[in-house]
Amino acid sequence: MRAEYGWADRLQEQPSGRGLVAIPLALIVVITVVDLHSPTDVHLGPFLVIAPALAASFAGARLTALIGALTVVAQVFIAVFHGGLTTTNHLAQITALILLSNLVVFFCLVRDRRGRELIRVRSVADAAQRVLLRPPPRRIGPLRVAWLYLSAEDETQIGGDLFAVARAGRTGTRVVIGDVRGKGLASIGEASVVLGAFREGAHRCTSLLELAAALEGSVSRGLEEVADTQDDPGEHFTTALLLDIPDQGPESEMINCGHPPPLLVRDREVSVLYSPSPAPPLGVCEPPGPGPGHCVDPFTLETGDTLLLYTDGVVEARSPAGVFYPLAERVASFPASSPEALLRHIHRDLLTHIGRHPADDAVLLAIERIPAQQTHGPHLTAHLKGAGRP
Image 1 (cartoon, one colour):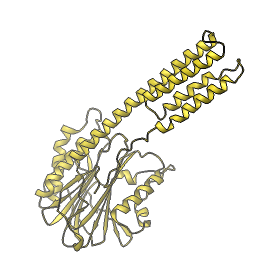
Image 2 (cartoon, rainbow, N blue to C red; image 1 turned 90 degrees about the vertical axis):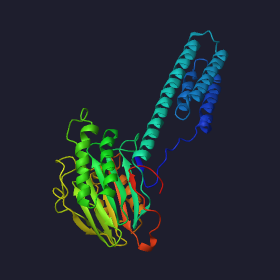
Image 3 (cartoon, rainbow, N blue to C red; image 1 turned 180 degrees about the horizontal axis):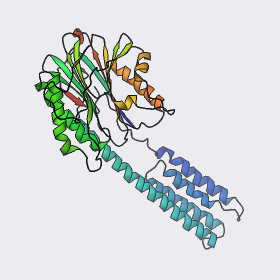
Image 4 (cartoon, one colour; image 1 turned 120 degrees about the vertical axis):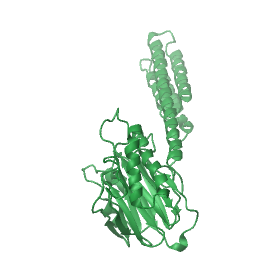
């Protein structure tokens, strides 16, 4: 599983195994010395194969091949002092050792090749992440933003979960978080349609209703081109939550299109912002005009409040006993903290709860309204679900 915060967990290179080469070398020396001092009917030479097998666990193919060659030399040395190289037993041992050492080196080459391919896949995913899904600034308008992305696939950092933050002119900030049906690389195209429509509509649309209608229209038109209908012939749609947070005043708006409701953290009290009349997910219905089909739900986001948005990969994560993760209860139990610290608490607690590799991607977005005097920096547009240290 890969976890991406508002800062990135870079690929960690494995520590060099050259310092560990002393272990197989010591084994070769010990086995050789013991065999030389053992009776002629005792043969410890076959145990020399342990040295290249052990080297393959931490070293590359070249170093493993070198250790294998040294084991063959040691076996020849033993044979010279125990009856000569022409004995059938010693010839069989040397031949078996050569074959087994070559087999170990072969599997080491296969492993190294797969490792290089994995690095290339991750590099491509990382590049796509930065081109298509750009991270937001740490602060945008009067808001402080932090995010966490958990990928169910180790090889990829992007998938069907999406979110974006954008300035709506100079008067407010608009936010979208969504979840494309399905997961992994196959859903990236559908996620890009939603993000592209939001990127354009956040600035152009005068109201949240108009923005929701624009997203619905783009998804309905774009699904035919980007959806993987051949390998996944089922229904394609995207749950989404749209927010409009003005710079002045706490009155804000949201439109829920079949997405899990956000949490509002105020003075360590957590409330769930349910929508009285949520709309269907994007792509399920025919594109509506501005207004019909969507309902705007007002809420207040006061200074010091934190809004927590998430995808269903968080609340549907199960413990080994089959219990869903109780996000609202756990958030209420955490100490008051910044958005970044809140997400760190949730991340650790969620992994402890599931106790294994997650079955679905998950995204969390924490937005805190800060005092006006703390607001600084340019108002930037940001579209994300990728890496980048804020």
